[in-house]
Image 1 (tube, rainbow, N blue to C red):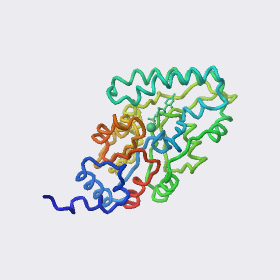
Image 2: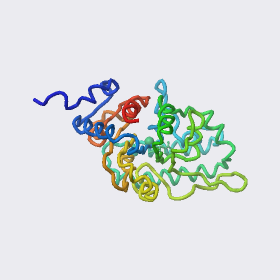
Image 3: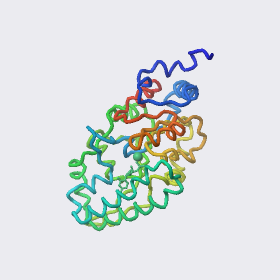
Image 4: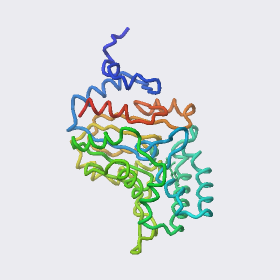
Length: 297
Ligand code: C5P
Ligand code: MG
């Protein structure tokens, strides 16, 4: 029998004892936590997804809006377009969370969803000046504890990369309305392209969808190079695609992967436990990541 002290840090943390917290390889996580705490904040960087990771999945059983939903559900989109967007969601979201398909099999469908969806949004004549109200009227929210986390990471100068297949303009607005955008945050996402009248005409740069974040990571190798002394990473995501957000990070020493499993839980739990070091099932808070950060910062 192994002596109990091998998972001492894990056992000391109340947040990790809850029954919605799954850690498949406790010895690995113990070692990771130990190293992260020992190396401290100067060696740390955070890489996180936005939708359904920083933002909440549901409130009282009702789904919260993703960045895309903020627009799709707003009065800015006419009913006829809403219907098309709803149909797209009904077709492609089940594929996004399908437990049986591989990422490679899902990619062409995600491309289709994003291409068609953004095309419809552009046809709606959306104005930049309307975005703030659309966010205000939506039920998009940050997970409980995000505000503390953002503030703490800024205070301790720990860089945070928000890597999102949502919409950059919307996610920044959600963060501004519910917390604050800080200087240590960097966002890689789909940003809207407005003409001189402030009308949406398209999206800038290469499309980021749920399952091509590895390519986005490689495009941002400059960012990672400037942070190359920060060899320890805490990665947070809610999709299997988010695991690739740290691809191409030079000199990576340790990576602690925290996964939020929000939907299609029974079918996906095993895979998530394999892929993520810590899996948080139906958790609407940042309690676990924050408890870990409190030990490191
Ligand atoms: O992986 P990430 O969280 O960055 O992906 C963005 C999210 O936006 C996904 O959860 C996806 O379900 C959602 N989405 C949406 N409507 C779209 C496209 C994506 O709600 N048209
Ligand atoms: Mg997500």
